[in-house]
Length: 287
Image (cartoon, rainbow, N blue to C red; front, side, top):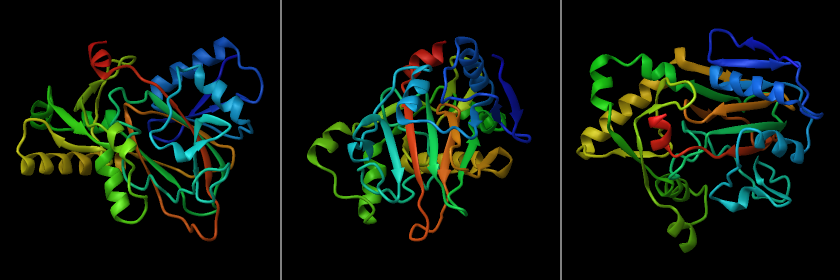
């Protein structure tokens, strides 16, 4: 079965039409979806009334799945699923817009995820959009001097840094000794060559990137601030307005995303996310 793709305006996002994930999906269709993902970075599938098991099965077509660092948000019956719910649905701790900053998922891991697949179960009637930015386009739009400056450089990524910011603001409990032992900083190239497309993308993010290796702190901070501001210019951004049973799947290596506000007290927002393991970025860069 061939799929139908509808580009979402002049963006890096496409809507997949004519696919129902609640039933069997043949190998030809899965191959077409995979290729579309590499071509567009973000795919949207509307009206997908699927179970947790079907969500997991679909996700596994793209690779092994990866658990989140914080176990309190994993669905007890299906720990492959991270629950983003301000009402704590499914027996997890409530989470009120925890991703309301620009980030790529789990880049603090030695091997960051390849991608994420998010299923919107209950969505607010207003607010609660997700913004995505195109890190291919952000890299390509850099001036030659900046490209030369960052080529071959690496940056340090840290979950400890982000978690402590949230804990100090009262949004997270103090970390346990076990968590602190697990949260080791890691180092990744600032410019990533995508293993499937061969294109280069900017690979730093406000959420988890803390410094540029080999630079003085002030110089590093200024350059990162400039790269972040550059990457979130309006011409690079797609805003997804959620409908119930939307699925959005994004390539974690070539995008950043950011949650937007909504009225937590008035509305429920509950979503399920699977996370797909990636290749070591040294392998990706050499591909």
